[in-house]
Figure 1 (cartoon, one colour):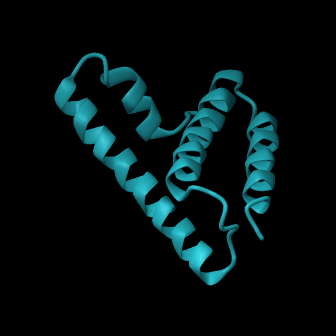
Figure 2: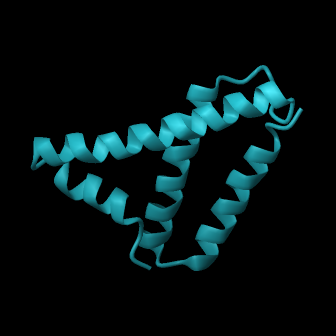
Length: 97
């Protein structure tokens, strides 16, 4: 397992190169904003609970995905990634009304 290239780049380069950190952060911002927009559309459509904060949930989900992949990479365990991924999917299912 090699992990997430974006997360690997963020972890290795952010402390060393401010320009690289800013460019990587733009990718993370776009990811969070896209997910938050999708959640907001889901709220409007009635497919996502209206009591959630799309921005907070998006930040959590992006961090969870990066953490799941990084943890599985460290453990060299596809089983751990599947287990943690299922936990994240269970959380996402809980966002249904």
